[in-house]
Length: 136
Image (cartoon, rainbow, N blue to C red):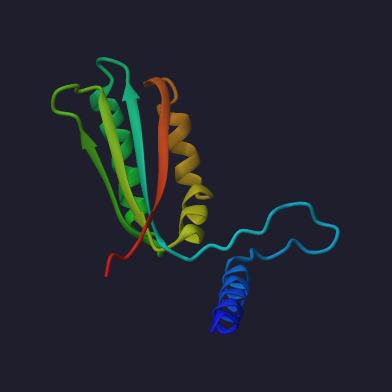
């Protein structure tokens, strides 16, 4: 009986090591290969606008929002203003996957928007990207 328990324990250990092994980088490559799933993504981008620039910022954002919502991989792109701190805004964006975000960041209107609002913002924009995981 002890022999069977020992053999089963060894088998379980080997199986768990095999299942947890990360893929190796190709020969000659030093970067780590990371397994990722193609999850939907959410971006939260906090923008801090200088006082008295709120209306200018909203007007500049309208075209950005309109164009972004037309992108094939964009599921939603909205702007919210903090009701208590009127100079604080947040973009809430959802995308089909990382490729859709990459395509968004490469658009001319995204780059132009950054240039347009450069003088309107009081500090750097805070951008966080999240995976949207199914909870079923």
